[in-house]
Length: 107
Image (cartoon, rainbow, N blue to C red; front, side):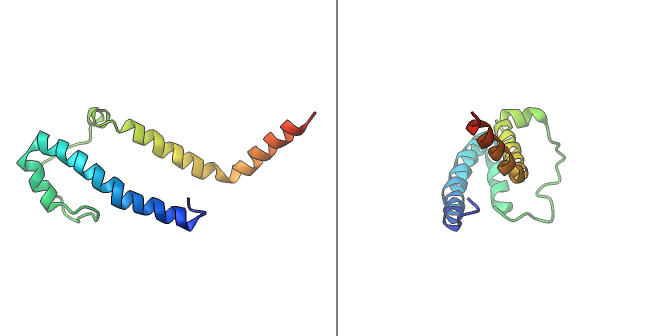
């Protein structure tokens, strides 16, 4: 997408104006059902896109693998790692494809 400014712009706008509001509604409804007023308070006090310098709450909490799995985040991790691999391997694509073409044309 980065090679074509129009595709990049379309992807950016789809992400910002379709995916983010959709994800916020779906996850917001789920969190509201689970945590009630506590989530609504959090949603009002924490900004959407820009991080804050101070913590929202003084409650202690820690990251837990079981929450990661319950929220089905492992698929996102695989996609992110695959994307990083593809980006980092791009300089080698021409070498790989050139060798594939050479081996197909040998008779």
